[in-house]
Amino acid sequence: MSFLNNNWWLLPLIVTAFTGILCPAMGTVLITHKRLLQVNLMSHCVLPGLALAMALGIHPSIGGVISGVLGALIAESLTSRKSENYEAVMNTILAGMLGFGVLLIPLLGIRIDLEAVLFGDLLTANFGDLLRNLIAFFMFTSLMVFGYEKIIYVGLDPEGASASGIQVNVLNIILSFTTALVIVSSMSAVGVILVIALLSTPTLLGVSKAPSLWVAMLKSSIYGLVISLLGFALSMIFNLSPGPAISVLCVISLVFLKDRK
Image: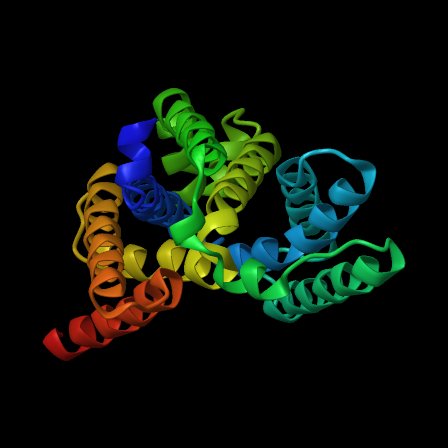
């Protein structure tokens, strides 16, 4: 323990590394299933769950996962990804759930730092944040080990997968739950903005010319790890906030890729 006290930056660095690896890997699966917009939805839908959980005296992460999945299920029940109004419905649910969460805060008489929800505070990451990252990592790894072929099939041909006997709806619910777990496990330290950035930007870099899903996930995670560690290092050197610094690096990385192409 004294070692960690003398090296206070070590635990935040480990959380940064796990987040930089896990979020892009999850994002790769979502982009192949055309569900990346769901990330933005779920990351905003966690706020009502956080508020209710705090009011009921249970861990906020539990409420965040539940409300994140609930928001995704509501959006999916109102439309399908093939319909023209899919994005409009998703954005409407996003705004409604976020507004509901903001209203609950004064109604329940609780205090939530909305700036921390948006941007996180990576330098104050603790063992609880690391444990939640490890749980999310285990859940995602288990999903890929036991359902890799089904995930690929559903991503390529959901109708064909359903006709072949795969429970597509069940798999989508499991994906939604895992996504919510990844978001909640990461946002307590890095905030909503960085979670969205790391689920999206390294994924766009990694899927380019990747011959398979696992190669795309590996490339995305490498990009995410490099961006996250570089952003963390720059924040230490120049006394910046790590979350926003990593988000800016995500944008710079995307612009650099566009210029190369």
